[in-house]
Image 1 (tube, rainbow, N blue to C red):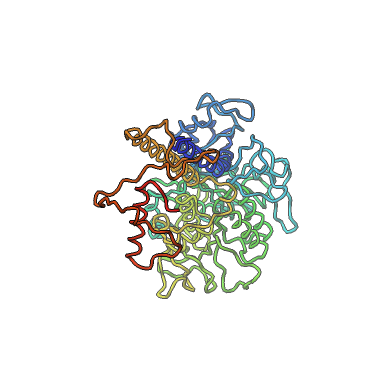
Image 2: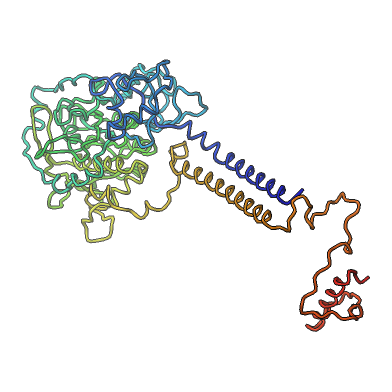
Length: 603
């Protein structure tokens, strides 16, 4: 076998080995990425009109022009009902649309398509509900029907039914009913005596953050008195929500008006010169825990927070009706944090007892309210404030027929911070709840002279524009993989790594082939080389008559070495002793040269 044949065989074996290695490393990962996709389940209507690809692309991808991407991903693919997408303007409720990896918004899910068999179906859009709580679809993950009745607790709280959870995050198909006051005119009087004030919105200057983020795709749950969904300034940005205490099944009604004022601070749609919310592209989900009372029952408040997390909220704003020092309420908050929901709540007061068993975890933001002169809205417990926001003489919007209002309370500061968290979640969709809360804190304006956090103001006044634009060194370093990523979240870097490996293998194979061609051409151009003759150093182990040393060609004598008649006399017997001087080495070399030139070896 010639060396050319051996080289070809070696190159082939090396290429096969590399290709096999790539198949082992990239194959399973590629298969996993193919199983896990972002997708959206088509509903019967959106904003009262049938859904279509252009509207869905605008909602989740930011541009109706991206409808072509949606069409290419889904055309010809068999849907659960056996139908096939042929017309971008004609979609059927229940169809599953595969979305590009950059799609974000309420309703976007990540995991194995429900119509594909899989041993582990994982989705990201909704945290796993507790046992018996259904999913957004017609059937819960545990198999409970979506029509199961709501459950009432002993102290007045209700656990929402599957049907309520299914519709809580959807925009209403019909106008909400008028609120029913306990006494005639009570709803109007609750917010009638206030005057307009806009110092808070001017101080925060959230509009400077809007070129970078407007909170698109974020679902902000407001746990308070409900939200008036009939307001023009909130049209299209308030979902049906839930009523935990009234039993109406809808949270988009409000009598006291505090929940409506909070929602307006988050997502009001004012025109030029009018009040606009911090995150105008966000959507508010009202969760009603009071009707006309002053305090929410702890069980109702806990059920409301859990229901908001189950219904897909990305941020939860807890109003002042909720006692956030209650152990049951804190447990519900911590459960929501574990589901990657940012929870914003009022900071505890000094008058409230410090319960060591009721401590909220990371990912929460404890908020204090301040005035235009940096006076606190309440006597907060020292060291229990994370950030502050306007909470004194804050201008907002009242319920229908009331108009502009202003008021004082920690709940207004909570709403401002919730809107800022929505901006961060939309701008940095890969950050988890803990990282979002950290970014809000780290970008706050320092108010105290001491080190941050300060006992009164925490990290300072929230800064919406800095929260979405400032570069944080701690976010530049590689972060450990989150639970979401471990569950199979799409990572473009993984796909890029496999592509790089394939390219490296191809380059190595090309380099080996180029080297082989170069050597072959070099040998073929050498006239002394005959490819039909075996190489001098190629000796087969099976050859019965291997060549002897005497058959080897004589080495040519260097031109500088004279030929003498007594060359043979210069031969010396070989010894095992190494020469101990330079002269001995030279003599030994000369002797060997003479022996080869004579055509024999010393015996």
